[in-house]
Image (cartoon, rainbow, N blue to C red; front, top):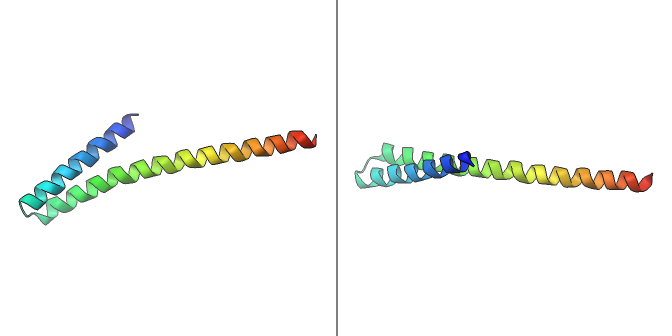
Length: 72
């Protein structure tokens, strides 16, 4: 749960930096903001991928066990 909050805060701070960079015409600040915002998005995507992989592996393991039990 804490990671989601950290990611949300990071994305918000990145958006602020990005927009500030645009307003003051600082490409460096704008780029830093974009990178920070993207980092929060990548973390969320990684966590989602891990969750989906765990669910698929658990499903395959259950299928294997059911097939094994039915052959006994």
